Length: 297
Image 1 (cartoon, rainbow, N blue to C red):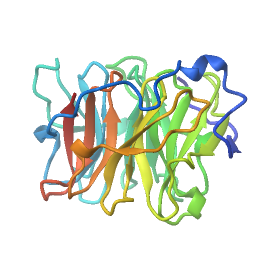
Image 2 (image 1 turned 90 degrees about the vertical axis):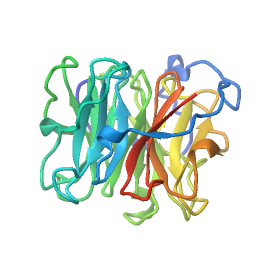
Image 3 (image 1 turned 45 degrees about the vertical axis):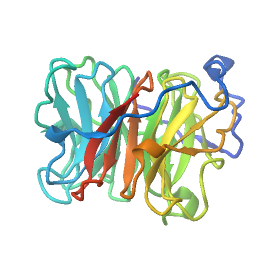
Image 4 (image 1 turned 30 degrees about the vertical axis):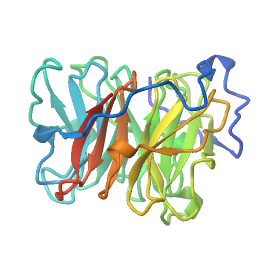
């Protein structure tokens, strides 16, 4: 998908978007979503969990690339890193800074990898006025990422971060402070478009999940766009939640806390695989700066 840098998307106050073709409804699912077993005990991915701060994991669908945000090179200076391996049975290699996506001393965070592994959205303050969403592409898995371009259509005058995209590239969650005019808490918005080769056309607040006094933020969309995995601190600590909708035209049902993955510490930045049986997330549960954990079901 090419960079989307056209005019701003229309802010829609209702879940339904008349511009969305019925083909993106993605079928219908039961209100509670597909049936899965419980999540396994989370395991830290030690190779990419350093004494520094790591967060926002993104796994390529074949399991051979793991992108994340880290200040590994210099404390407080966050860049995009990648760890690679030859197969899912092999060990991860040490994280390497992705120079094409990282500009020091700016912060480049919240990588969001498309399901085909060829498009990357990031949140960056390189523009000097808060965080905006940028997009870059590459021709192949071994190719070089293009220079990130502003995604003007989903950005606001306040902080904006990419937060999950559907497999067809027609729906993307955005974490933003626009509703509070730059003050916390963060809220979830959803941007839509009719073609993966065009600009985003509509963006709406996901009011059915947002709360007035708490934060709902960076998460992951299921491949069909019918389930969202996200973060909220409504319970006092930041925990992982999920919510389901029957079609993309419908609002999400009430969110459910993922009890097996939430504890007395803080969990955040979930990534869900296409089959929704593998989750990666950020946690400070071991008492260190945030690390990357994974769980399966």
